[in-house]
Length: 113
Length: 114
Image (cartoon, rainbow over all chains, first blue to last red):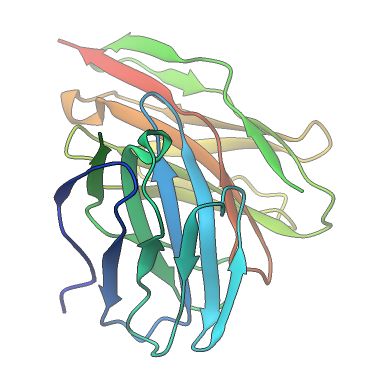
């Protein structure tokens, strides 16, 4: 049981490049979320999903796309990277319902030059 | 919309002593859940404790307990018998009862001194 896995661990991009951050969970969780954490700050919700085929925007969705074709996977796509997207990105999953514990991946550190 | 405010950016405590971290929140929902997460230098997010808003009894988990004041929208975390391993950033978070959305505060960096 690997929990929540994220790849890559670290990535450097040039402005304007696109890339996909991968997130997978093996706990059969319905809910999955993407957050970004800027230095000295809390987590801000980018996008989330309450099940396969269902996604919605969080607080800071601009510049990011998501899709959820399977229960296990929830990739985050950066369409055209900007320096303001330099951050640490966390993926999380949980069972359905607000009471459920979120399990977080180890994070992906992204640097956009 | 939900907001979560942690007014103490940094705190320190001597080993074996007790420390309280503050959190206030605002929500338009009648039912919700509140959480404290710990983020050590490894960056891994770890659940510390959880409180259901419709329960008046404060949650406890070993050395960790909360003081939940629903009317004041306050949710503080008390750490008793602080240990060096408690050194971390602590985040308060709220979550809707049915939605997959969570809102986090900006965190409090806690340092436990030997």
